[in-house]
Image 1 (cartoon, rainbow, N blue to C red):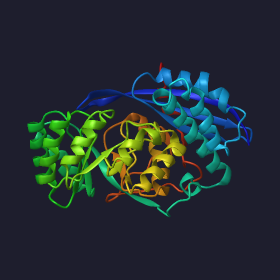
Image 2 (cartoon, rainbow, N blue to C red):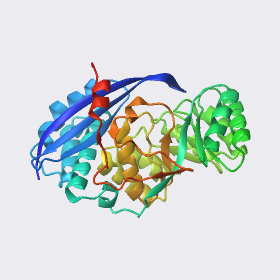
Image 3 (cartoon, rainbow, N blue to C red):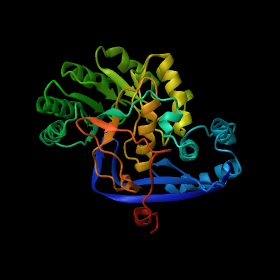
Image 4 (cartoon, helix red, strand yellow):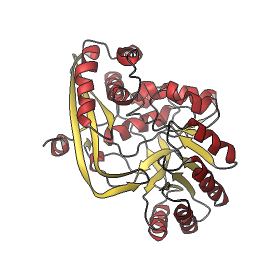
Length: 371
């Protein structure tokens, strides 16, 4: 089997209500889809994360990665990954748009392999026999304490035993938000906190202490991802609250100090950013060596990221919980059949070959950039 072509599909879509988090206001969703063709008539699909500049990822795919991939056997997925990574590594590009573009190619290769062999990717990865995953509801956006509490109660009423709320704006306001949400859901629901890197270390410590008082489950990205001294300060002040991060890292090397220095309880690689299945497997292997749990990030991503993350979570050692986005994102509605939805806090893992989905071409045409 040989790869004969690589298509790039750039998607954008406005959201009905902008997502308000500590460090951004997201009014438009973006995704870049990779479609690989092979000489046996099969196609593989993957997704690159897009936060800004979908055209940049598209250029990386067309001008740098496509010449390295076309003509290769997708069974050589590890070698393809290393060659893509090596193309710009010595030039100082081992993160950012290059890794995000690589992610879409890698996921598409694994989708091709699954279709070729008639197996879901989760089975190809070795698997743990997981056909359903515990899922938490993500995310309760920044708002008044009363509104956030009402949203949390609604999600708990839908059967979720874990919910994530946004913080990272102001220590006093965030404490009031946490108190309101905890009162709304009671002690039987885990509450995760996501600061989106909105605090400095002293503020993060103050919030973490309040979160421990309220029995919160984890504090995610309390400080900017490159502030390792800040992570060390926050970690040293925490006792019972888990520290989570990793969605802003790209490789096992990028996660190395966070994990090896004991700064994290939960690592959160994003399969559409961290090099696809191959890159995320390497991060998970590092995490396993230090007994750090893996809770993959999905966030403001498109449908293929969700589909791939389901397969990764079904197979990875140390898996903790799946992030199910409850916020309205039109780009999560471009697949046939539709993505599964949780029932009583569990989400089923598709058992069809590959990722288990194909593109809804009408939806893709509607959201295609420039359409």
